[in-house]
Length: 217
Image (cartoon, rainbow, N blue to C red):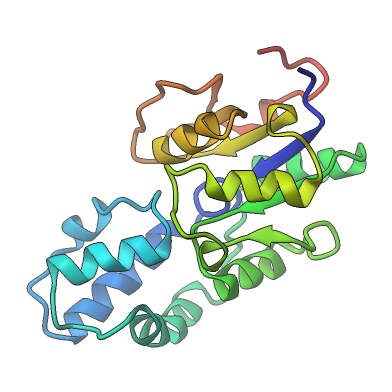
């Protein structure tokens, strides 16, 4: 079926903030007295929703934070300070999003981040006028690789899942897109942690190379 709408993952696909969030998680756990190394944090499954990631953190380092909101409250000002003045956008990905909306394609974001985190990222990207609706971790009961988020994204776009193409940077996201009946492009940037490519319809090192008119799957 023809592709008529596009869905972007956020962190690692449109913005490069995963490393900063990893540092925030490390500092939050260290401040709470947890025996943790930064290497352990970098190998957490960041493709999960923040809700599920927190449960994993809570299991591995019990007793540090009572709830996700408490830990997030500690990290928010740290993230703001660490990222102050930084352009976190991934240029090729942001450029593709702008090209798609200029060509009148419906576009949205499906992310495992919180609503506040997604809103802040959209403002930093400067795409508020194009992304008015999105799906975040508070909108779903199960995060990636479950397809619920992408199916909700298709509903927002008022498009059949089979007509949607997803841009992802994690294998869990690819699996979620395929389970939703969508096609998926995996962004595998050279400086990112390598991901399993199985299931992806196309693998690109830079989304600037994606041509919506010339793509065939």
